[in-house]
Length: 90
Image 1 (spheres, rainbow, N blue to C red):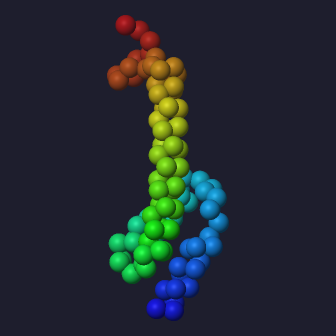
Image 2: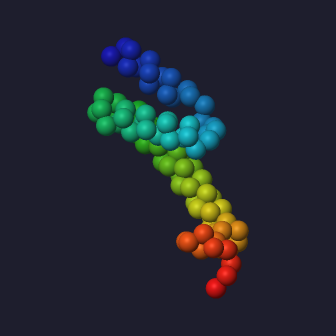
Protein backbone atom coordinates (compact mmCIF):
# COMPACT_ATOMS: atom_id res chain seq x y z
CA UNK A 1 0.00 0.00 0.00
CA UNK A 2 2.93 2.35 0.61
CA UNK A 3 3.94 2.26 -3.06
CA UNK A 4 0.38 3.06 -4.05
CA UNK A 5 0.31 5.93 -1.56
CA UNK A 6 3.43 7.37 -3.22
CA UNK A 7 1.71 7.26 -6.60
CA UNK A 8 -1.27 9.10 -5.10
CA UNK A 9 1.00 11.72 -3.59
CA UNK A 10 2.61 12.31 -6.98
CA UNK A 11 -0.85 12.69 -8.53
CA UNK A 12 -1.85 15.16 -5.84
CA UNK A 13 1.19 17.42 -6.37
CA UNK A 14 1.26 17.10 -10.17
CA UNK A 15 1.08 20.48 -11.89
CA UNK A 16 -2.48 21.35 -12.81
CA UNK A 17 -1.56 23.08 -16.09
CA UNK A 18 -2.78 21.27 -19.19
CA UNK A 19 -0.20 21.47 -21.96
CA UNK A 20 -1.92 19.94 -24.99
CA UNK A 21 -4.72 17.64 -26.10
CA UNK A 22 -2.58 14.50 -26.25
CA UNK A 23 -1.15 15.04 -22.76
CA UNK A 24 -4.62 15.71 -21.38
CA UNK A 25 -5.96 12.51 -22.96
CA UNK A 26 -3.08 10.44 -21.59
CA UNK A 27 -3.61 11.84 -18.08
CA UNK A 28 -7.36 11.30 -18.34
CA UNK A 29 -6.84 7.67 -19.42
CA UNK A 30 -4.56 7.11 -16.42
CA UNK A 31 -7.11 8.65 -14.05
CA UNK A 32 -9.84 6.41 -15.45
CA UNK A 33 -7.63 3.33 -15.03
CA UNK A 34 -6.79 4.31 -11.44
CA UNK A 35 -10.44 4.88 -10.58
CA UNK A 36 -11.61 1.69 -12.28
CA UNK A 37 -9.08 -0.30 -10.26
CA UNK A 38 -11.14 0.48 -7.16
CA UNK A 39 -8.02 0.97 -5.05
CA UNK A 40 -8.22 4.73 -4.54
CA UNK A 41 -9.41 5.95 -1.14
CA UNK A 42 -12.49 8.17 -1.17
CA UNK A 43 -10.63 11.50 -0.95
CA UNK A 44 -8.26 10.51 -3.74
CA UNK A 45 -11.20 9.32 -5.86
CA UNK A 46 -12.89 12.69 -5.45
CA UNK A 47 -9.69 14.54 -6.37
CA UNK A 48 -9.19 12.27 -9.38
CA UNK A 49 -12.80 12.82 -10.46
CA UNK A 50 -12.36 16.59 -10.22
CA UNK A 51 -9.14 16.51 -12.25
CA UNK A 52 -10.77 14.20 -14.78
CA UNK A 53 -13.66 16.64 -15.19
CA UNK A 54 -11.16 19.46 -15.83
CA UNK A 55 -9.32 17.38 -18.41
CA UNK A 56 -12.56 16.34 -20.08
CA UNK A 57 -13.67 19.95 -20.36
CA UNK A 58 -10.31 20.93 -21.86
CA UNK A 59 -10.41 18.06 -24.39
CA UNK A 60 -13.99 18.82 -25.43
CA UNK A 61 -13.05 22.47 -25.95
CA UNK A 62 -10.08 21.53 -28.13
CA UNK A 63 -12.22 19.12 -30.16
CA UNK A 64 -14.88 21.81 -30.62
CA UNK A 65 -12.18 24.22 -31.81
CA UNK A 66 -10.86 21.65 -34.27
CA UNK A 67 -14.39 20.97 -35.54
CA UNK A 68 -14.94 24.69 -36.13
CA UNK A 69 -11.67 24.93 -38.05
CA UNK A 70 -12.69 21.99 -40.25
CA UNK A 71 -16.07 23.64 -40.86
CA UNK A 72 -14.35 26.84 -41.96
CA UNK A 73 -12.20 24.86 -44.37
CA UNK A 74 -15.20 22.94 -45.72
CA UNK A 75 -17.18 26.14 -46.23
CA UNK A 76 -14.31 27.89 -47.96
CA UNK A 77 -11.34 26.16 -49.49
CA UNK A 78 -12.73 22.64 -49.75
CA UNK A 79 -16.20 23.64 -50.99
CA UNK A 80 -14.94 24.06 -54.55
CA UNK A 81 -13.97 20.39 -54.90
CA UNK A 82 -16.50 17.72 -55.90
CA UNK A 83 -16.40 14.03 -55.01
CA UNK A 84 -15.25 13.13 -58.56
CA UNK A 85 -12.27 15.45 -58.33
CA UNK A 86 -13.69 18.19 -60.56
CA UNK A 87 -13.38 21.77 -59.33
CA UNK A 88 -16.12 24.37 -59.18
CA UNK A 89 -18.03 23.44 -62.38
CA UNK A 90 -21.77 22.69 -62.04
